[in-house]
Length: 62
Picture 1 (cartoon, rainbow, N blue to C red):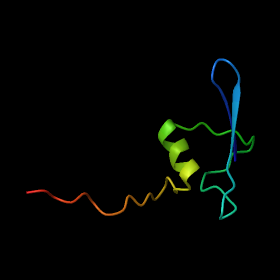
Picture 2 (picture 1 turned 120 degrees about the vertical axis):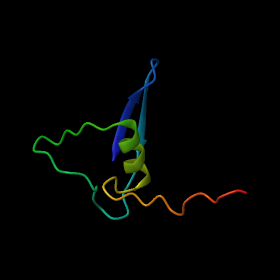
Picture 3 (picture 1 turned 90 degrees about the horizontal axis):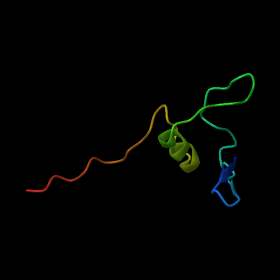
Picture 4 (picture 1 turned 30 degrees about the vertical axis):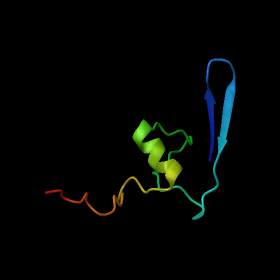
């Protein structure tokens, strides 16, 4: 995955290779997908947004 971002003075290129070899996203004919910031974050971390595993619930205090 390549992400190009403008910071106002230039561009930053972020690059990430997936271990599984594919994205867990619905395919579109033109290849363009609109993402929310939360979806982009999950994609970047390799989390399947359709079935996120949030881990154990927070411990109860008191």
